[in-house]
Each structure stands twice: as structure tokens, then as C-alpha cells.
Image (cartoon, rainbow, N blue to C red):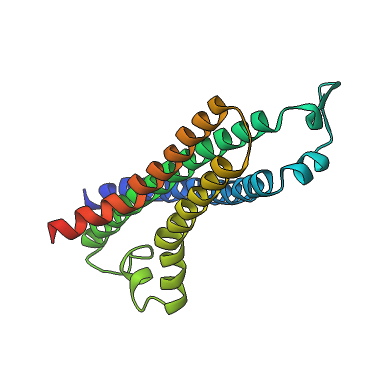
Length: 201
């Protein structure tokens, strides 16, 4: 009975681990995209004339779209939209990965109980034991520093947009709503859970 249970748990463990690895690739890709979009926003808001001059034409299925002829306000709003979309995907995938790792640790504990040995703990106890200082720094950057940087960056960019760019009011209102969505997403994803943990303690 234990052998059968062990086979089922081991197969499920491998599937779960593969699932996490695939989600991690998506998370890392979304992280890069979010970072690039923020850089593009910086160029659009701080150097709008230079940004428009850098735009050329885009060919899509034998159709040419002259990006430099599009209103800068519209392009900026599209960029804010993309930032919110990829922010949601990044936060969602990160939360999903964290929850799956907790589940994976439970599977390891269960398998270790059947084996009567703690050797089956690659992603749990073995990984966390003697955790390198650099890994702590990487964890701090991704989970604490990066969300703070993003929130600070979009707040600064939005204040510049509202204060220096002479764009239509409806574009600015739309952009404010989207930038607030990005800030709220990162706050709910990272900081609210931390505050809840402190209260429980």
C-alpha cells in the first residue's frame, strides 16, 4: 500500500515541479517585459519629441502602420495599458508559484514520511538549509525592493506626465487609473500579505 502511495505521490510531485518550472519561465519573462515597458514610459514622458522621432513604421500582414504619425498621447496610453496587463500577469504568476511551492513542500514531507527518511526534501529543507547570503539578497530584491522601485517609478512618471505634458485631460485620467492599477496590484501582491503576517504574530 505504501509503495503504491509512494508511486502516486512521486508522479504527482514530478508533475507539480514541472508545472512550477513552466510558471517560473513565464514570471521571469513578464518581469523583463514590465521593466522594459517602464523604461519605454520614461522615454515617452521625459523625451516625447525624441521618442516620436525614433518611431518608424511597422509592417503587419503587408500593411504598414506609421507609428510616428500616431498621437503621442494615444501611444502613451497604450503603453500604460500594456504595463498594467503585464503587471497583472507578473503578480499573478508569482503568487501562483509561491503557493505551489508550499504545496510541493507538503508533498515532500508526505513522501519523506512514507520513506521514513528526510532525503526527499530538495525544494524544502535541503534548499533552505544554510541559505546563501546572495540568495537572501536576490529574494529581498525581487520580493521587496522591486515592487517599491516600480511603485516609486510609476508615481514619479505620472507626476511628470500630469505636470509637464500638454495632453488631453481624458488621456491623463485614463493613464492615472492605469498607473493606480499597477500600484495597487504590486501592493496587494506583496505588501498586504506581509502586514497580515505581522498582525498574526
